[in-house]
Length: 380
Length: 196
Image 1 (cartoon, rainbow over the protein chains, first blue to last red):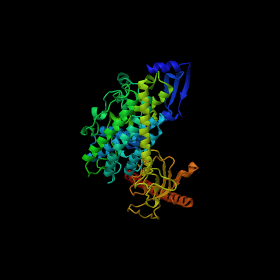
Image 2 (image 1 turned 135 degrees about the vertical axis):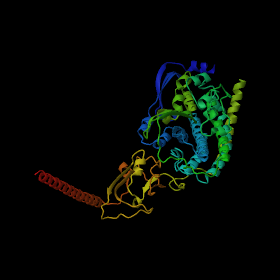
Image 3 (image 1 turned 45 degrees about the vertical axis):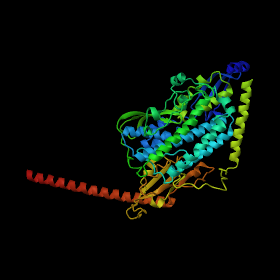
């Protein structure tokens, strides 16, 4: 109703404008060709490919499966640990390799920490797009703590190359467990603070509630995944519905969009799913830290040379952005014959034209922000 | 009307809640670091610059082969038999002159994959991160400690030795051939004699 009224006021004459590729709120190099009727969006056409780096072809050209791992980091540079995890699981399944318990626990803890770090960035920049600068800084303070933990164990802050086929590149330091436990303890109150500061801020709610509503049907038809799908009220999380690694040992909930302040599947729901997912990640980390064995060689199962048989596999894992799938075809040579990546951001971005029709131009920024795309992953 | 008033009240309320939080943060210790004056201490094992201890390098090329971006360029020359290059600190015998060991840090992706295969642990990352340059060519680090004269000398020596070896080989071959021929002629004459 309100949308219609505003639409009538703002409608004038159709014109086409460009948003991006150098627009700060397109989260990278995304070019949106927007057809406007006054200030109302009638059509959006995303142009992608500005960050295409031929990952799949590179993977074929490498002469070793482990040489691809640093490249998988660069698919989604915001959640590199999750990308590595997916690829390594795929290669291990092809090799039928058993991984030591300790390695599995460390991997899960790292993947969940990375999920929190990625969501903090997603939430922070989403707020920033809508003019909330302070939460962005507070999110980055917390994110920095996670990156420091990662730096201590892997030696790098963003692109780790830490998880390797059969194990980990090096053992975690002794300080890893207490530091992670400490982070979990200090981070809980910060989520509450974030809720007070941003989530339930009336201005923020006004900007995001009832905007970019994605009905569950549409989300399923477009094969959306991750918080995008869960925001629409569909309870689908690969960690629970198709458990990989050791996720079946942990108890956690799948947060879904409820339409608390507006309609189910609006921008606020997608945002809130991310906030609640961070809490669930903390729950998983706590359980994993408790169950994790203290002793064990992390390099135990690492093969000296990867000898691959002919075969193919599709492995899907839940990254902060949704279902990340690696489809690998192997032949007898030492390099993969074909690596196909099903990138969640790419699929999620394809919904943008469907849900931004009829929105105001300033709301388009909110919608793009709520999808939480990483252009490195869209283009690969 | 009532709804608008309520929303207005909510807006003011959330502004004050937000302000209270930022005020609380104002009195917390600062998290930023005044970079050039204060530096963060990097944790052990941090990956920021490759370093090669060339005295320990045996020129096995394992690091160059492990590199996904081919940023390591190594050229080796076999040591001639009159030179003893000694052993590395880990006890591996050195048999090759490492005439060139260039690492292009502008290509390097800091993946650490070259560090693990090294049999003498002579290539590793050092915590040095302030090495930006105006010219990209300056980012190619040369680790070989041989002077160009020495390199040509070593190469010439090897060539000479190889030539010498080849000549000896040829001589030996010729000798063999000669012997064979002699034998053949011997047997021929023998056969001739037998025929007579």
